[in-house]
Length: 459
Image 1 (cartoon, helix red, strand yellow):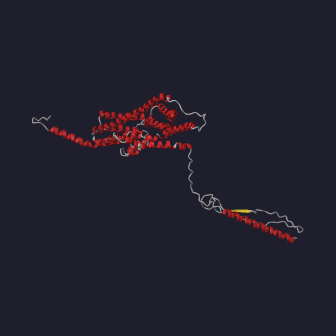
Image 2 (cartoon, one colour; image 1 turned 120 degrees about the vertical axis):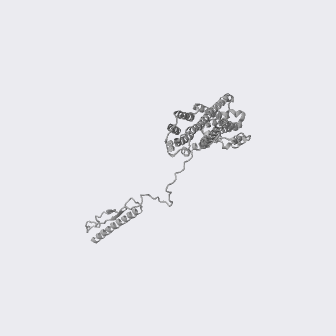
Image 3 (cartoon, rainbow, N blue to C red; image 1 turned 180 degrees about the horizontal axis):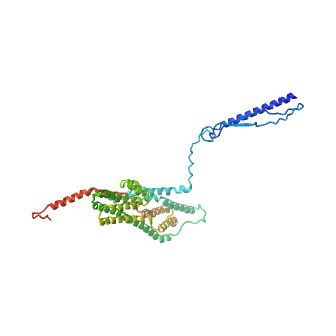
């Protein structure tokens, strides 16, 4: 019995040692598989102290041994491994992209419906930024050519006015087609008989047609008045620039003021350019003024909140520093008034549109008119209401669109050409100043030395 008990005890001890060793090895292998730079590897070593077992009874086959599943583990930390940060690696044979692109947005109904209007608006704004040109004799001949109607018709798809009308014209033509399909389905008994036919008397349209015509005429006339006022304001600015420069060129004769005179002429030429950039959205004033102003002056102008007024202040200070009589200074100061007047008119036109209530009334009238037009024309035209609505919408909305475009007059004017024209005129006057002065002085001297036989000059 003693031998049996001793054998059982030895077998149990070996089982514990083997179990602890296997467990330690499994945990160590698992931790080694983790590529963790910030996690310390831990070596688990099993310490198997000699276990004290009670002395087994000789007369019994049983023992007081209680098996232990986990031996005592002593933790020993290795120094940290200087590697990358902790990252979980996906268990996949396909390498994921380092920065996956976000999935594209699913187009919604609203985005689909807004695609054509947004496209038409982009075409319109690109046309607004197109550079205008001043007309010369050749362009006027081409403008009044008898072939202009064919030329204008063939270039219809290039017109931003016509392209901007695509959204409303398509919408109202679709409504007319829907009304025609509905009424045709009722006539063919494809729909229940209790549904009404969409038809109405044309008398309301006959009564309201003059009102719509007056609205469109007055709206276009008001827009053209603003265009004309903006054109006249710019003509005064350009004419004032030429006159101002002429006064400076002919009035400042002191050689000590030569540098200040050249700077003053540069400021005068820079004012129309600054005003143009102030009125036209998206203008590059830095690029436009680089060839007119020095670097220090340009930096002051660009840092100011109101660029045209800043240049006017440069002009005023330069006049005060000139070595001129007080009367001449006052005369030059009076020339600045044309700049102030033109600036005030342009800012007024830019900031105050035609009364919005008038614009909204015209737009709402046009929309309601064309929404109900197929119902009015059904009895007389039937399916012809579709092309009739298309022609009516294209014609009337085109008139309204022209009024909206010329309401802001400055993109319609050739402001770049006007500024370049003023610049060329002033440079030409500066270049011809000495030549003309020499010619006039030579004629005066020649006339003074010519005399008659009695010593008097010839008449």
